[in-house]
Amino acid sequence: MENQISKYSLIFTLASLTCLLSCNRNVIFTGTHDMPDKTWKLTDTQVFEVPVTDTVTRNNVFFTIRTGSSYPFRNIYLFVSTTSPGGSVMTDTLQYFLSDDKGNRYGKGFGDIRELNLPYKSNVFFPVKGVYRFRIQHGMRVGDLKGVSDFGLRIEKFSK
Image: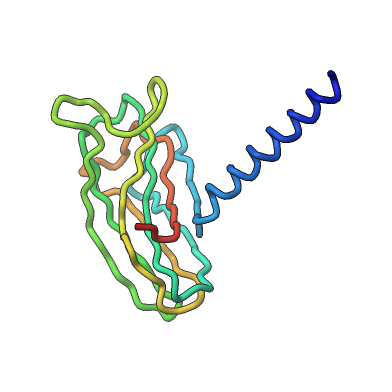
């Protein structure tokens, strides 16, 4: 009986591991920066360096933000600069809504913290091999943006 339980435990563990690994197969890059004291200072630019070797595959690019109930706004503005390996720079000003007009926050999470994926680019490819640098700064009208736990960048293969 004990041998049979061990066999089922091994099968369950292997099946879980296979599922876990296959679920992350499409992830090209993921990175996160924690905010000291849950505050994103205007002077704290989040920088992500993404090594790219595949210039054919199309990708989706997301930002991930985790905020708490002390976040004072319904939205967030971001200034994003992407520098290619050749040195050309593309800059965007973006606005995302983090809650509805009644204050109900979007995203998933338990208790005070909500995590929200913010789509940035969809179905795009990187035309040149090398390191791409993403620089993100919040564009709110306060110097210290309270209630932000962390901010991340995620790139995954495009799927329909």
